[in-house]
Amino acid sequence: MAKYSVLLTGILALWTPSVSGSVVARQNNNTAYLDAISEYVDSIYDDIWNISQTIHANPELGFKEVKAHDLLTSFMEAQDGWNVTRSLYNISTSFSAVFEGSGDGPVVSFNSEYDALPNLGHACGHNLIATVGLTGALATAKIMKEQDLPGKVILFGTPAEESLGGKVDMLEAGIFDDYKIDISLIAHPSNGPDTPYMRTFSTSRLDLEYYGKTAHASAAPYEGINAQDALVLAYNAIGLLRQQSQRTDQIHGIITSGGTSINVIPDLSTASFQIRAQDDADLDAWTKRILKCFDAGSVATGAELNLTMRENSYSAMLSNDILASSWSKYFVALGGTVPDAQLDRIKQQGGSTDQGNISQRFASIQPQFQIYNENGSVPTGGPHTAQFEVAAKSKKSFDKALMTAKGLAGVAVEVLTVEGMVDSVKKELEGVEGARGRKRRGVGREIRKVKGVVDDLHFH
View (cartoon, rainbow, N blue to C red):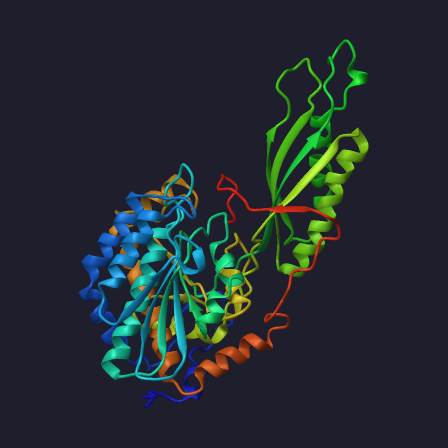
């Protein structure tokens, strides 16, 4: 029988917003089980430290995280009461680890990421993301066992976040539906302040080629069709379009080739671009306008355009306020501080993540936690920089990750023990217009879609 520790009315008032922009501590005396969570996490410190360091020292690209996958699954298989499944639905480096409670109840899930960046290693700190998910799930299961709680906790290994959208593949395969999860918890390191709200863009990526015709650039340029000019024209058209774009519309890209000889009209130019907007609907509208710029390059020069939209676009992160408030309560009780909620939830967006797609379907949060160099300083570079890669392996950063994981475990246990909380969390999600069952609209033209490749054009 469920052991409910508090009433739902208590968790709906976890914080009192401040009207100022200062950092505030969201006060609430109900932090049941936090001491037990902390004691357990501290008891497995060395094991988790070794896992984090091993993943950091062995960076692997998306869907190739063989060592990290084996390390995490082998560790979970050795834990009492956990049922581990490797390579879910033929997604080779994914996994699930399930701990079942004393009966039917809420299903709380944690996600661990462990892919790295080309040439930069773990410069996004996915060794720490793996650490948070692993630790949070283990601590939740510990409390479930000690208190004989009903419900279920699941740890998902979610590969290829950086560029290939592993969570999107898992979502579309029906994994999260089939496991009947109620909430999805994850956290991300940052060089900014601690916060329960990760604000990200919806994003898509594309690759393109313009095909022209070679000719001697001096003797007979009129016989050629300049593929490089087509790309330059499109690039400039995008630059002019920016003035008429919304502040939350973004595009950035690289020209990967534009010719091989200065005295030959180029017959091939190639480029890759990433498009971002505040949500899926705006991304669709912005993408349609961008595509006209690429069409313009073709029309003006006569070059043939081949444009490929990559699979697995990412949706903007939708943070659940009830879960965010719960995490803030535990994080503050552990000695942390968080920004004012009213300002925090509307702060400027930045980057993108495939957790956003999950958050549109299942109640979710992805707190961001500040990491440090070994001397206690904050890295001067943010994610995807060499400075961040160094900070991601420090013991101070690891300690902050464990603190974050303790907070997420507190959230999970609260969902498991507070009567009606899971229903309120779901109701909040369903009340967000278009959140459940949202489908991305087409961009109004036939475009070939292919699976992306790991490269330097990351979603973050």
